[in-house]
Image (cartoon, rainbow, N blue to C red; front, side):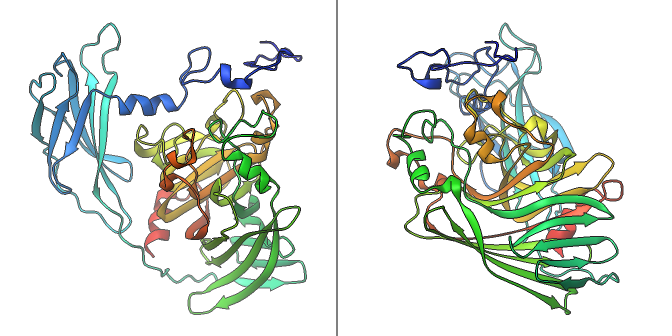
Length: 477
């Protein structure tokens, strides 16, 4: 329907002055009203695909292809395979599976050559089944089924770095800490206990952060934010605990030089408090800044037992305007979450921050990617900022903070900005739900406890080096 300013948007219960109503309960589903698919439809497609592909052994090159159809063979499908290292395809071929009748299986061997992976490299085998000639439902070449298999896991990185001739310097006063050399300048604000700027080759990259992030915009499954009292779902507990009104208070900050590694270490302790009382969540984060620009961040987040399960455990970083180009190695290309990721293959993807936003009819958590190894954000004609970790993480990158999604009832009410809000999550609550709490699996919940995680931020010049080269350097030195 057309709004006051003539912009169009999807409306729902209550928008017409009607009462009683079920808010957006009348407009929920796996597609938008114009039949545009929701991201979750990819998950449904993968779960229901008519072909099962299973590896017989972890290092075995033979696979079991099972026809899940009840009446027809797989003769209409073409099977292919490809081997990729860190997302780059190095081998590919077509697979002859013969004629597999309905309900039957076949054992096939894939003739890929064994690969040697250096430290930090990752190999993946992907097998696909596509429509051969086309049908009344599908065009020729349409993807019908796929599966991925790890060829080798990542090796544990070594915690050393190459020496550099560009020494870091440090100075401080009552308000700030400056760490710098001829290419890098990092500024900490003591009162906030946070980085307030990162310059690389005079390019201004970071505006604020990283800061502890335990709040995300609720989804419809977390509880109906549009109903009075938030009377059902986990959202009620989040609101009661004032998780959306958390303030981070600095308890301690220290800085020291490490001459053995040529680095400077800044340690910060934050305590998260709401407006009324102590929240029982603390965050110790240590920044080891290296002369080559790498900032290794180690985190310990302690969540007291009096807290409800949390929306997330991670950090959020605000980048300056113009950081729009996005690439990552992880699950994609669309949005996916820990409990809704099977339909999103692992690969090397490129996109934009603007395209990450998913315009759910009621604004809510959106745009995340899971099982991510690294992510890089670049500004056209400027610098880039890489985030990488030895353990897989989730991320989202949007032109609005989480609270803007929470406060809006419609997408056209969101105040988007030029800045990019980058969330890196060690744990994030799943987006599914059941009518009773016990139906939500613990592996997709963020329960009270102690969480430890680390990651590396590394500014760079896109014209001088590719982010994947930095990844290999940061994770292996």
